[in-house]
Each structure stands twice: as C-alpha cells, then as structure tokens.
Amino acid sequence: MRAVIDTNVLISAIFWTGSPKRLLNRVRRGEVTFVTSRVLLDELKEILVRPDKPFKLSEEEADRVVKAMQNVAEVVETQSQVRVCRDEKDNKVLECAVDGRAEWIITGDAHLLELQSFKNVRIVTVAEFLRKF
Image (cartoon, rainbow, N blue to C red; front, side):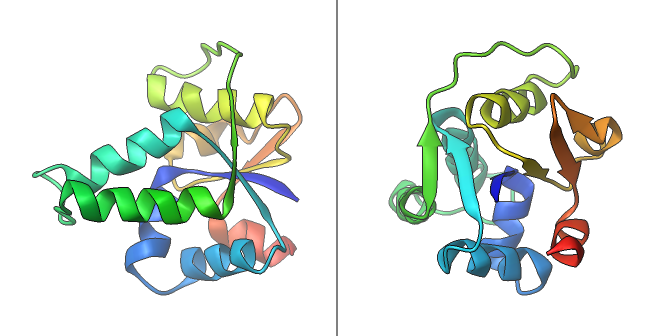
C-alpha cells in the first residue's frame, strides 16, 4: 500500500501516541509505503521550527526529525501541477500522490477529506485507513 501521509498526521505521530503513531509504526515495519516529496518534507520542517507553533524545535532538531521521516519514506520528484484546492499546500499533497503513484492520502485536513478521492487516490483519515487495514 502506497500512501501520502499529510504533515498534520506526521506531526501527531511524532509528538503523541494514538492512531497516527500506530500508522507510523506500520510504515517503520514496512507494512505501508510512505510516499512524500521534498516540498512536503520542507513543510514539516517549517512547521516544527515556527515560533507560533507549540513544537518550537531548533533547526538541528527539526533536521533530525525530517531526516528520520525521509529515512522511512520514498521521496518522489513531483512534476504534476494540480489546481484543485484553494490552499496551495493541499495541491502539493495531491501532486505527491499522483506522481508517487499512491493509492491513499491519509490526512486530517478537512479540505482534502471533502474530495474523498482524486485521480483514483482515496483520501481518508488515519482512523479510516487503520480500520480498513
């Protein structure tokens, strides 16, 4: 199973226990192929160091987290240009899924979840994904 795991889910998996952490553990065991892009990894780092977010990691700490995610992911080069969502960051998730040949996008983002699917990629919450598998 190939899945793009949205940044909001990754952050939950990194900092808390629960369904997102279980999903990340499945990635680590090789049960799910985590597909991401450089743009999405850069977004993760940016959020981890932002002063208005509760994480407030140093650049070095954020780099370590991003490297750990990169080590368990398949990082794809995106070529597609999608203009489905108003939020450009949501379009980047869709582009990654298309170019990474993902079957799933796992997210907590309401705008992405409203789509339900995009070009044969199912868009679901972590709980929905874990219930199916």
